[in-house]
Image (cartoon, rainbow, N blue to C red; front, top):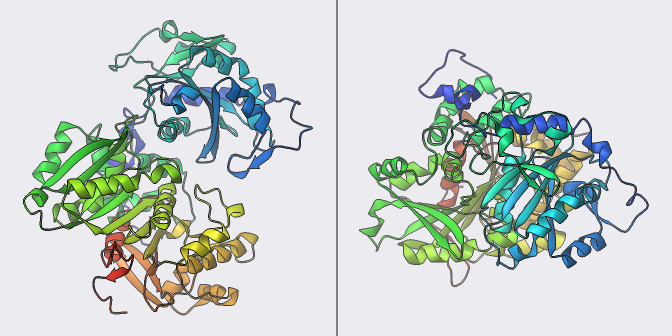
Length: 589
């Protein structure tokens, strides 16, 4: 693994890797959120602790949110037409209480109130305690009839204002576009302060003009103070830059300075450019940009769900030439127009292939595997609207969306010609040893082993724990188990613990870097980074399972991923009548 760094490396756009460049693009309530998070952590945890659940043992414990849930309490709220939902993002847990009318689809544009709290995750009753602590708040929302209460609880200060992304996720999960978004600012006044005293917080109206007396804009919900932040709560700064500069993804082998001053950083900045220069995917200047490069951009709404697609402009002139379609699971919901740019940035290396006439790409994702089943309808609609090849449908996604892409492929093996998951472990972890959004039982793994699904997993070496984790720790045992489950799901021969462990000491450099044995290995140099590639034969002798780890990369969508994905996916097609995998060309294995 190379370690050289040229600290004098520079290129146009390198300044975009510095957060200072984006200071005017972050959420207008960022500093308010930071103050609330830090202040709340100084008193609210103890204030909200109750003894009413301490003697109960009948709750159901949910590992992902570190909490017991008592069904009778939830049912009491349901009798009042108030429903409950819970979740976790970036180790920050949350729950929401929302009107039943939203589920019944008689309410489409609710108001949302975001409440920040400090949850003690070591206490399994923390979530139920908070639900009781905020009972009056939820009751006040219930009386209004159109208000969702979103309670975001960080276990300690949340320096990254995760509630911003949680608010986006909730809208995706519950399928709504809020009419108004509010922040609970009651703690400001409980502390004897005013909004105008919050350090570095400037309140602006929806057109961006500063309001000198923000306290005059405060409204009430019951006995609580709320501030309208509609149109001002979301970030329009690069999520990749924020994540890397925050240190959210760290590893001894990763250096932000090295990445910034590298060929990989230079190529990745081409994707960041879209986020920096535009405000939404429908920006007229951006559409003109695509048009000048021979790319057709279109957005659609199907049964209330928005999806976008990019195609070569020539597709309308040559209907006889059926193009393959790459469906990318990434959110493009209308709650935040900037999400289009995030999607484009993450997968920017696909667009030269679109311009070359090699493929079409579409974006759509929701926040549950069941909801993402709707992508089947959207893909079929896309094939009817455009000259696309239904036998060459590929799916991909990064991180939790990678898990959704994989689950979609497992649910629709007769539609998907190949699947590439990004930013995931190479194995399939046991449900009790992961907090991922998709959990696979032994029955699920067994079911997957009965059909042929060409599959590639690509991750950064720094996130590939089986390659460098302590082999004496229990986690390594679970990683080996996960690898064996992946082999089984993809119809490959099993490997023993000794065989897997031996990979870490192999004479083959790629095998050592992958940390697992494969039938073939390849070392490629892509976008300024070594890429360690291994193929495993399935029981039919076919090389339909590939893994790749990218030198010194952490948990981001790196520019190598679309390139490596296409190299793998494009080998395959699917006979839609028989379900058989079609080998489009020989790989020379």
